[in-house]
Image (cartoon, rainbow, N blue to C red; front, side, top):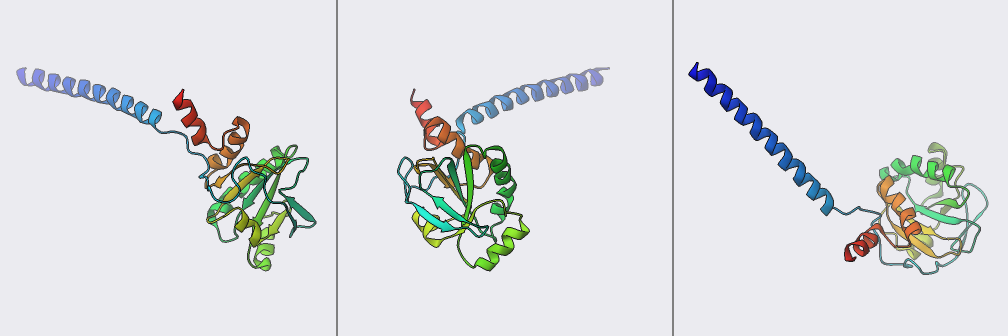
Length: 197
């Protein structure tokens, strides 16, 4: 009987230790969650800065017509730089299609790239991008200092850069719209401002 009592007591202590360890772990996860600030688009400080007027471009679209980038217009413009060989760009195409469909009353999504036009025509057809203006312009990428893809620039209807950055996820792409709504260049700027108060 003494051995059975000892084993049950030992098991009871172990369960109590596990419960205490669980609560300590939950507390540490909560502290870690508070320390990690939200991550938005990774901003590239070169090129036109947020709040500056963008250079204006008038470019032919591979899907037809001319595209005005940086000129005053009736809607905001999201210029999304991509490549037919970029897997992350391809992963974000459904997000762009959803944004284009749901936000078309105030936003135009423009796809931009450079390189061989034939590859882009094939990409447009295979990815079903015929509904987007699609421009090929090395100068556009150089102006915004696009060094890695996918990269996005959000321009307001006056042609002013409101947000920009490297966008690898849906959340980072949506952070550009959060920056527009809050008036801060990035989610990091907003978090830093709130931390100062």
